[in-house]
Image 1 (tube, rainbow, N blue to C red):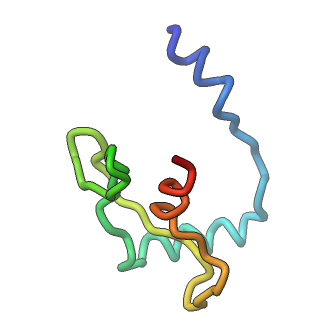
Image 2 (image 1 turned 120 degrees about the horizontal axis):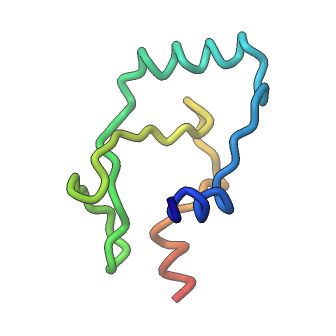
Amino acid sequence: MEINSSLDKYIKVFNNVMPNNVLENLIKICKESPHFQPASIIADNFENVLNEKIRKTFSWEMKNIGVKSLTEVDLKQSLLLLQ
């Protein structure tokens, strides 16, 4: 199928990237996390919009959990600056 051959240019799968114990802990955290929220898309006006016809999934921004960084970047502001 043409789609599969073109996606292969952009998506790669690597085995054994993390030790098994780290991977098991990550899976456990994800299964038990209350932080997942419906995933939004970025609309033409750079607003986050929920549209399950386009993206019906949940996401969790996995930043440094519990740490407020002074260097976090706001995606909306960054996109506005690039215009």
